[in-house]
Image (cartoon, rainbow, N blue to C red):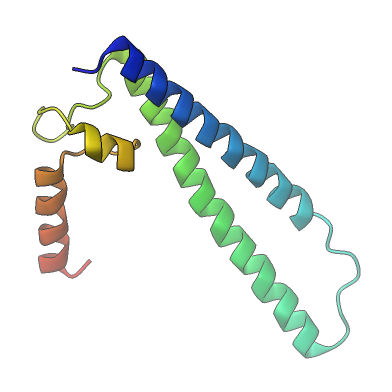
Length: 121
């Protein structure tokens, strides 16, 4: 079980990462709304479209990470943070420090990766 001090440290870390990510997401969103005139050159237009597509993919990834950070903060609140959702065992401190949004212990994560490899995912 996590101590109160450890919970506070994880809460601070997760909140800080969430705030940073939300700030970056807002910058990206604001930048994406300023398209200006469409470049007349087909190559310039292709580069602009590629950049826009790339920015949308980044925003999607950022959105997924935001949800995972919010979920981790919720688990801290309800007392399930650090408990593997697969087997119910405690997740090691080292794993939580390396990846505080994790929901699986290392054994269950390894098993999941082997299963994905077998299924070709």
